[in-house]
Image 1 (spheres, rainbow, N blue to C red):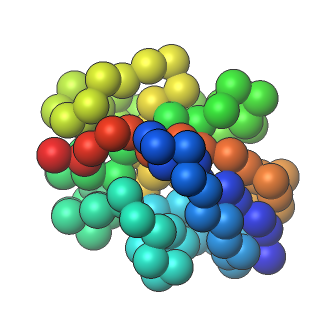
Image 2 (image 1 turned 135 degrees about the vertical axis):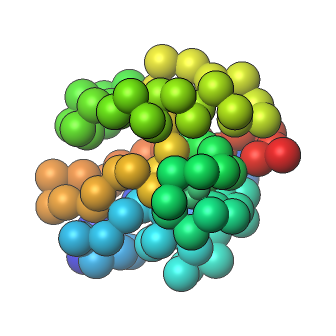
Length: 107
Ligand code: FES
């Protein structure tokens, strides 16, 4: 199990413990994290699982593919250097302590 912190736009926090080997989106949805809508269920067609990964962690991730980058253009809130679609982030042991921020809105 690894620990992940979600920091909402209003700075409220939700922390969860998640199994590795699944996507960050699935872990968040299963735990009921507010602000991860994931309407497409992880098929990379909705951009409602947008998160901003804190800088120290962004380098631990496999870089976004072109499909993810293209879909981020449809995110409702502004994207930045740490923006990712969390259905494309595979949880692995090295991500224990991961911190991600949620956009103001997914719509
Ligand atoms: Fe739809 Fe990630 S859940 S793009």
